[in-house]
Image 1 (tube, rainbow, N blue to C red):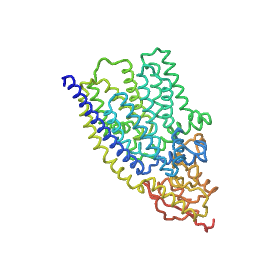
Image 2: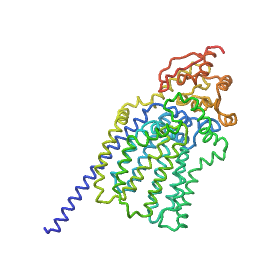
Image 3: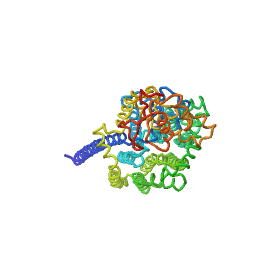
Image 4: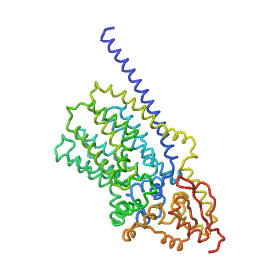
Amino acid sequence: MTAEAEHMRDRAVSQAGSGRRRAVLWLLFGGLLAVMLAALFGRIMSFGLRRDELMFVAPAELLGQWRLYQDFFYNHVPDSAWYFRGLYLITGQEGLLGSARLGVFLGWIALIGGTGWVTWRLSGSALLAAFFITVLMVDGTLLAQAGMAASNNLLPLPFVVWGVGGFLLETQRDHPRPVVFVLIGVCLSIAAGMKVSAVVFIPAVAIATFLMPGHMAFAERVRRVTLPMLAGGLLGALPLFWYMAVDPAVFIAHVLKFHTGPHVAYWQANAASEPDLALGLGGKVQLAYSVWLGGAALVCLFVVAYLTVLARSGGMLLSELGAVLLVLVLIAVTAAFSFVPSPGFPQYYIQPLVMIPLLGALVFRKVGSEQRSQVTPVLAAGFVLLAVLGAPRLVPGLAAVSDPSGFTTTRVAQGAEALKTALAESAHPDGPVATIMPIYPLEAQLPVYPELSTGPFAYRIAPYTEPDLASKYVMADAAGLQAVFDSNPPSAFLLGYDPALEQPLLRYAETNGYQPVEISGLGNRYGQGVVYLKPSGATE
């Protein structure tokens, strides 16, 4: 055998061995990802009920009979409400809360898939993409209320990643495809339709369409990039345009004026009820620090910083420079906007987190091939740290999957069924259930009062709302609720979740002959629910 033949044989054996190793690594990562997804699913389904879910989950049932904004209070843009409504119609057998939590899990799938695909395509490194996927899956803030409860906090992020990531990828092509920019526009508009704060991603990307890709003439860029993305943006924003056209004053009152008026006034007056409430700039900075510079986020930033040190400083193409600058601008803009809402909550600070992996993937492209071997041990150490950070939260979720009877969604459904059974003994069995915790009656498809149908949010701001603004809401204060109950007597009162706020309801129940009935399954982190019924034989 000649030397050349031996060399070719050795090379073939080496390539075969390398291929087998890659296959084993892919199988290993695929198995670990499946386990982590199962743990994530278990954590979502067993995560304790959160008050915000009263607002976001309720429309899935209410939209079958009432109109958003006009018939019940809803203080957010409409896309998440219709998303949960659609899932509820498809997966109603999972229950009201169960279908909504399933929707959050699907959001996670889209976020993980988008981050993995975009960072892999940008960097060419499957290992780096796997690292960034893991960062998101073990991030402490995302594994808390922001990413576990059925709300609009996580839902915009997949559309942002697919939109911004798609833009970065498509502008690197020699011949960008207009249809892709239509889809990018749709994604970014849907993100803003899920959560209004996601609108901050749009201006920077819109401006970038006039500048990227740099190798195209300006007129061609407008025709093939700017106009298609504008068309997609308009298409994705149709639900917003619809509600603006139907009743712009009511829409703006719910989506904007609530957050800048009575919402702030309520928390200023009740700050003592939340000891760590971030109302001032100092508190917001501390909150931002804990989200951006703690746990998995800090590990991710360290890796990106290390890649930056390794990256070549020269030879960057104009398109590459534009992509990096765009992502840096998006990080800066979203970070700055996080400080605008008052009071601040952790979920307001998560949007910059999904841009860091895109930045890391872009920087990795400039790391020389001879230096990339230095990245592997750093990523390996990063994986170890992420495992240590994520295990305390994900391992219990994996255990929860083995016993779905312990899911929060299951317990809420059981409590709702017990409530429904108890109402058979009520003097007004067909009347609405009066409660600031409407998830239970709605889960059982029982009627509720419009004024309380999305929880305590409208009721608790009544004393802080100007009459003109209050006229745009379906709301009532304590005196107004008494008139509502007089005209349409409750089948029952479900109380025990906020004694101070519920005091007028309890007083009405006791004054009008409603008696406490012991029913199990109505407890959550806010208290143990107590049902007050007027027995069917009681006199008025």
